[in-house]
Length: 72
Length: 173
Image (cartoon, rainbow over all chains, first blue to last red; front, side):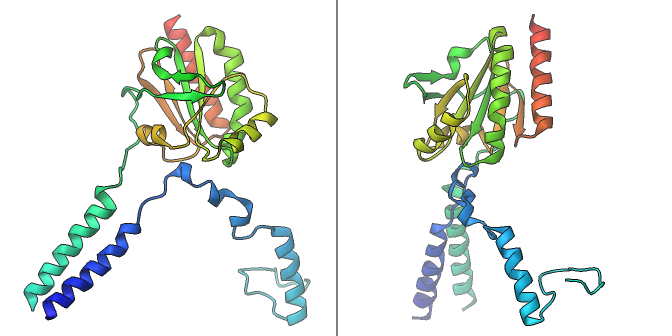
């Protein structure tokens, strides 16, 4: 019984790998679309970040920023 | 109990190996000096474009797609190569790999080009050539052997290819 359960479980686990296949470089057309980018509009997101920082007094948290001069 | 785990791990390994590595064709990039795989593709004007018919010429095969920025940048340069060296026996073939032909046509209507364009939406030719980046180009010598491969397109690629073409023209004149 236990053997059967393990075998079935292994089969199920293995079957998930059937969906794996490497994507070829020429198949990445959809990934190249502008709306697939992490940051589709850098200007817009920079603006949002600035507003967020001043409204929430939450400077930083987006990486290393500023030189410590107190200017935003 | 231990045996059961042994059996299941062996089974697991067999599965992973066959599904991940067995069925997928890991074509390695073609080495310099090996024969360029022949292809026969539909060209822009609807005719068949075959690599073998250009034997005896220096052929520059470029795999490109309209969504790939460096590919787009290489178009004016390829046109320049075609205009400069076409009469001397240098053939430029740009193999388009767009899934939708209309995407390629849209781009090509904006950029003037006189060289040959072939369509391979299934991607069987880049598979044979072992294309690992977009764009990838191959310079094929008069004997049908690969002289050089270039991944990506930058100013230095353009300079290198032109130099290689000049060497070939000089050597065989």
